[in-house]
Image (tube, rainbow, N blue to C red):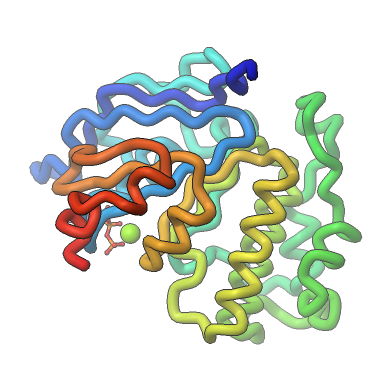
Length: 242
Ligand SMILES: Nc1ncnc2c1ncn2[C@@H]1O[C@H](COP(=O)(O)OP(=O)(O)OP(=O)(O)O)[C@@H](O)[C@H]1O
Ligand SMILES: [Mg+2]
């Protein structure tokens, strides 16, 4: 079998908040269509790594490339243009816009996205995936439940015709039925051939849904490998404190 093409490659990533050195030389590779799980206890640098890759952390060093193009100093909108979509911790929907407006604002046609592999995620397909959103089209972002906001945030990401979706704690604080629905959608995104980088407190679910996983401890990768192998590793339990 031919290995899928390397989509995003990051090497020797460092990041700082002021004088606080948070990431200490992280390497990460995400191939096309691959799901990568990012694990680690609270405060170990998962969100910072994501935000650094996306260009949200100004004080950074290292090399970041998407399909071979050097994006080490790219701004967030440039990463978005390259097909990297972000579902942030805390969701990031526009509270003063309706569900419809939130989706329309994010929309790009496959032609606009300029990627032949774009999979044609349009409004109809997003609403089919999240029937709850279809019932809430005229509601403001601020009027939605936490679960609906999360679905809208994922729907917005899909509307950008991404090659990679980065999900930071997508199930945080949601009721079990909604959590199950979010995981179902993550699985269908994976089936669709879109790469994902997932952070979630439920490490078993992360591993079950990932091809590859890495564990961060104090801003360093301390364990990495095939998700199936990690699931059985005694070291994993030690690093996660479970
Ligand atoms: N904006 C910020 N300014 C200063 N320090 C920060 C900032 N954001 C995070 N940190 C610190 O950087 C370190 C890594 O935090 P980060 O949020 O990346 O961890 P995390 O693995 O995502 O944790 P969690 O599981 O709690 O989301 C922590 O020590 C945190 O306190
Ligand atoms: Mg975090």
